[in-house]
Image (cartoon, rainbow, N blue to C red; front, side, top):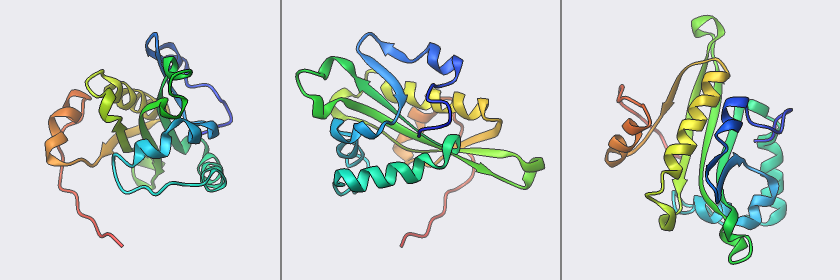
Amino acid sequence: MASTSPELSTAAAAAAETDGTVQIRRLEVTDHGKGFVELLSQLSACPDLTASEFNACFADLAALGDDHVILVAEDLAAAAAAPERRILATGCLFVERKFLRGGGKVGHVEDVVVDAAARGRGLGLSVVRRLVEIAKEAGCYKVILDCTPELRAYYAKCGFVEKGVQMAIYF
C-alpha cells in the first residue's frame, strides 16, 4: 500500500519491470478502474466495490504503511485496448510484529492471483519474489503463506518449503 515513500526499495525498483510491457508496483487508488477487484474475484468471492468503497478500503490499508504492501502487475500495453483489464496479477504482504525473537517481524504473503489469461508468464513468481524481498528488507525473520495442496510445487519454485499444518475457523 501507499507508504511514506511512494517508491519501492532500490532492489525492488531495479526489477520493477518483468518485461517491456508489464510493471510490478504498489497498488494505487486508480487501480479500481483497471480490473483489480475483478482479478481478486478469480481467487475468492469478491463482490464489486463502488469507487467510494474502494477508496475507503484503500485509505484504511494505506494507513498501515509498510506493514501492509499490495503489489500489482500492470499491463502497460493494454492502456488503449482494454484499460479496465490492465491489472494482471497481485499479491499482498502483511508484516506482523511480535514479542518473540526480541520483537521480531513475520511476513505473511496473502491474496496472490494471476489473471487466468496471463498465467504461465512468470508474473505470479515475480510478484511473490518481490514481496519476499520487501519482507527481508523490512527485517522479517521469516515469510509464511497458506496455499492449497495443488499449489505446493508452485510456491516451492518461489523458495518456500512446507512447514506445519494450517488450521482455520471461518465466520
